[in-house]
Image (cartoon, rainbow, N blue to C red; front, side):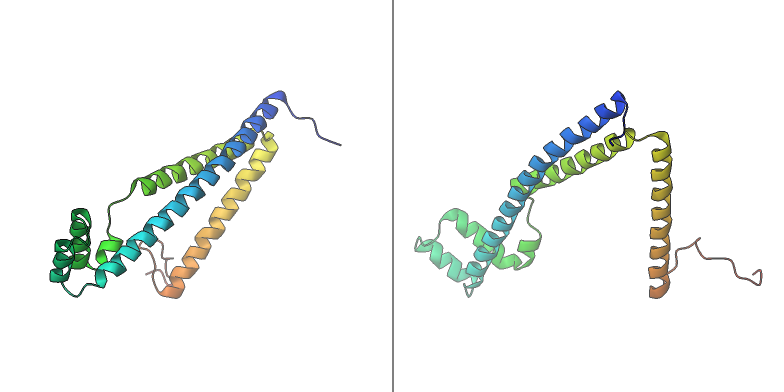
Length: 167
């Protein structure tokens, strides 16, 4: 037997359902951009390996002089050759990387909206129970973090328990 819910709660659940539908599309698009980032990284790595095939800057200049590479490649190759692997790690963000970051933030926002709509549809008793579960979970997490810190020998200032002898 299905429990009757208020029309207001039904509206909240409908909002959550709509958010979930949009979230699926966001996640699909986000994965597409993630694959794009991986392709860009592979291209940068391949270009780096090509550059490292040159013995010296003079070899790069010779390749440019013989028109084996164009001016744009020449500039990139010199930069890569001089910076080495650091150039792979410290490149400026690409358009695809920025778009992916935006999509990640949008996804997180929609996920938060879903949780809020679903919470709003709960009865007051259910809300109280959810809050209690969240607090218990938070306390358990804090205990886990404190235990990890104790094992590592690090204790945050102000969180040490007072000694038993009153010092």
